[in-house]
Image (cartoon, rainbow, N blue to C red; front, side, top):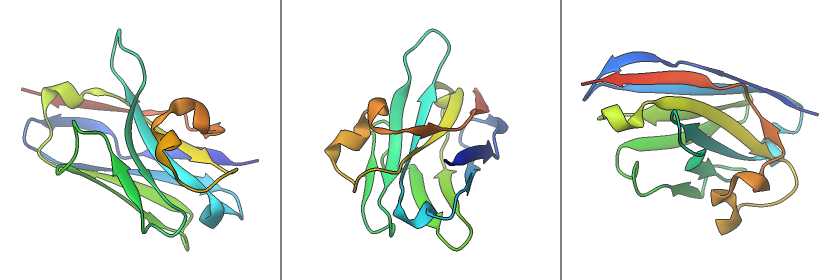
Amino acid sequence: QAQLVESGGGLVQAGGSLRLSCAASTRTFSTFVMGWFRQAPGKEREFVAAISWRGSITYYADSVKGRFTISRDNAKNTVYLQMNSLKPEDTAVYYCAADSRSGIGSRHYLSNQYNYWGQGTQVTVSS
């Protein structure tokens, strides 16, 4: 079992930055593929980024590539999402997710690949 708790959301002006954190309560965090997803009002949950066990492989949605950076600190059981050059269309609830069952692959673009989820943190970008 693992619990994921996100933090760092808030209100920011367009062009600004935020860093989200996701702390995991598990001793096996270093074996989890970690991901970030987001869901805007009236829209389906969408993939944002994913990172491999050691952080050497990362995937990004095209909409955030070059602006967002996913990273992890296995010593702190934490994964981060650094978000720069934020746009109003980035407004959403951001969710941290973990896959404890497999190594990273293209399937990690899909939400059903993950077996643990956090409660989400709201990010609002004003124009």
